Image (cartoon, rainbow, N blue to C red; front, side):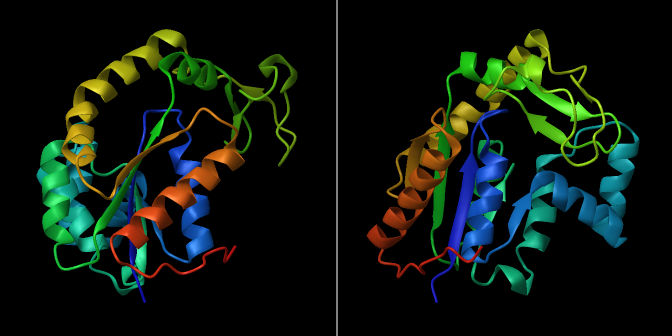
Length: 230
């Protein structure tokens, strides 16, 4: 059986986490995010996890070497034998180069970049709300944010996160493009790289993602499973 080894790239607010989750569910492979693997590493109590915990407790950023080690450990588990979807890694060219080494003996990486104009990203993030009671995040950018006031899960009040303001969002985007554009250039010359429009409605994004991944996989000579296992 072919292994779909997918890397999702995209700026903050592009919706790549949601799309990665859905794709992974439909194809029966794990979605692996940077946040998830950091938390798992710390909770595992492993030597690597203890190192990460110490770094985070000091308020420092996790180095390329550390995060790469954690990803290497995560991708060594048997549940990724049929593939995986990576969300949040790699973020830099050195991380991308390290990932190439980790998956060197596997089916090729399929890299998809979700493209959304910065102004649309600012609008989306400004429209996000979080429940004061249960912490659920709500994306209100598809409607009038002023009309979204209560959480559908628990009825709690929805409020704007303090860091979801235009200045913070634009700074996040500036950092993203500074750090990530070289990595996109690193991948863009490969036959297994595609950019898709992330500014269209979510279902259209999903269809474009599935089409891009399956098309690249077939072009690489892989037999793609039908998916839709949700």
